Image (tube, rainbow, N blue to C red; front, side, top):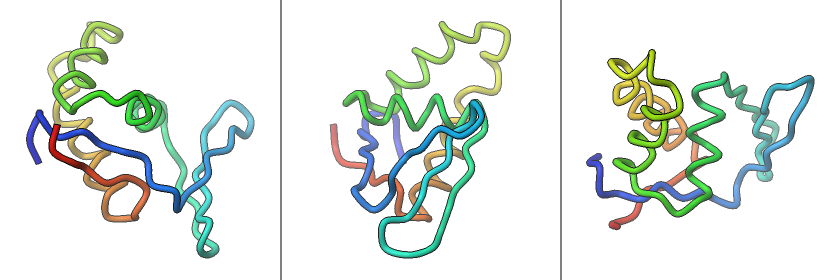
Length: 92
C-alpha cells in the first residue's frame, strides 16, 4: 500500500449508525464490523475519492494531538477493512 492509492468503499457492506457508533453489515452474509472513532473517520473519507496521503493529511489537521500515530492508524484500518472486503484500493 502507498499514499497514492485511493481506497474505495465496496458494495459488499452497508453502514449503519447505532448509538453514536458505526457498524458495517455484510450484504452477502451475516458479518458485522464495528468501527471505532478512527476507523469511522477513515471509512467516511474513503467515500470522498481521496487518496491515502490526503486522508492522512486531513486527519492530521483534524486531530493535531495524534499526528505521530495517524499514518500507522490509517494504514492499519485500511488493511483490516481490505481483508474483510469492505474497501479496495485503486491507483490514484
